[in-house]
Length: 111
Image 1 (cartoon, rainbow, N blue to C red):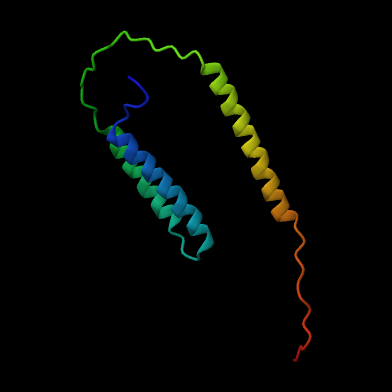
Image 2 (cartoon, rainbow, N blue to C red):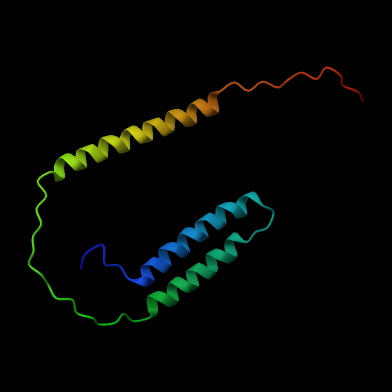
């Protein structure tokens, strides 16, 4: 079974957990506590989907071996780009946090 052949249940679970994560984060910014409600409902839906038995469809096994001679170089390029992206995001975040923020002075302040 290849990694590209995932079922519709896995896609539903990925989307459901991603949307629950986003809604929990949004729930932290609001006064409504809807995050735990979505979390409990997502857990219940996950349990239901995992308890449904899978169909027994047998896929024919193929003895095709694909060899990629540039695998190591692609992996090295991916790791270098990932590390540089992480360093760049850290530098961007630190420059945003460390930037000087000045408040303009009030010239006419009345009680």
